[in-house]
Length: 246
Image 1 (cartoon, rainbow, N blue to C red):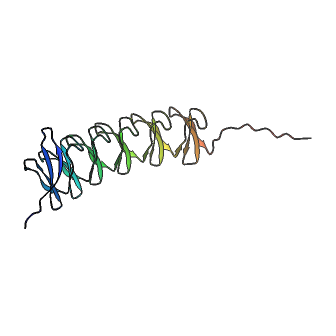
Image 2 (image 1 turned 180 degrees about the vertical axis):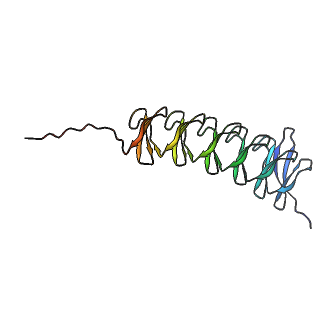
């Protein structure tokens, strides 16, 4: 049976003016050069353009998985990822990858700089200038720009920095709130069921609650100024005394 072999499109132009063409055999794609030499045998369901995502590389895909080949046809990045993002979108020279449902990063050599173990990775700089928020086993932490975990994934929630106090982020663990600083240190231990905004009731203080029943205050250093021993705390309002009339 004769194989169907179709020349379908011009792909790219190299520095020495060599042309490349996409070829198709059934539902599989490959590539030949302008001398008719087969560079990539028709074996991919998807074949992107060279230099589109990275100089000298083309993204390829087979059965829903993706990798990269170079202009010699060599597979630089194994076709095993469910997703490969654009370089520089999350961090310079890194591309987001998805493998077995988990996210990580590869560098411009195609090497994994962050193992794909996270359910979610935020962009660097979104919450912390030098770190990226990551989610692992439903808990949150941070990685730095070397790919190392700088804050263990142990928090149920990490809010943006500076929302409550400059340099601090509200964190939640075991249903209790506290604060971390920009170095990842706990400056207020997570032991409160609620923490209010500083200055709401008294300048420099934030209302704290334990078990939703007892109230007190912390100051901007995290120190408990008023222990949470009270069932209610409200601003004192002066009231006019009622005087008996003759």
